[in-house]
Image (cartoon, rainbow, N blue to C red; front, side):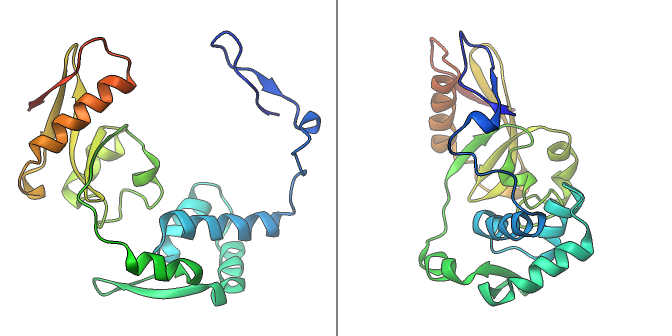
Amino acid sequence: MSFGTPRDGRHTFQRLEDNPRWAGIPELDDAGRHAVVEYFRIYGPATFDHVHYWLGDGLSAGRKRLQGWLAELKDRLMPVDIDGMIAYALRDDVDELFATSPSRAVRLLPGHDQWVIGPGTKDEHVVPPARRTPVTRKANIVLAGGVVSGTWRTTDDEVVVDWFDEAGRVPRTALAEEATRLGAILGRRRPLTLRMA
């Protein structure tokens, strides 16, 4: 079964065998290799520990099985040095990765967002160690330049941001723009305003 087309705002389900695009359940090793490749494509550069966290701890794939899939894919992976830590990216993605400029984009994300959960809250490049507890407990997060830099919540007409001191200068304009964008996403009649906690 899978989710079907919603009807009257309610979820529906469909039998997969009735879907002409359904190709059936792949063999475990084919699916596993595909999952590992997609992990590196989405979260790379990543360490093997990241892959074990996501697919091993999260989906119980098993360390031995994961090691086998990683070994089979070694020719498709390229080591990348990130501040002295060796991580891996798909060779096909490396040129684009190195051509990409760092971003200072600010985003308001919900708790347990995949950006943070994919590498895990232990990854200090994404979540500052001193801030792991609120992020692990599903706090809504402020992401600035790809790093968790604060938490947020809404009131009737505000987005209240608790900016982390160690994150540096508060990007008030970008946060206010995100508050406006969030209000539109939530369908608020009036724009949400920004308030710092």
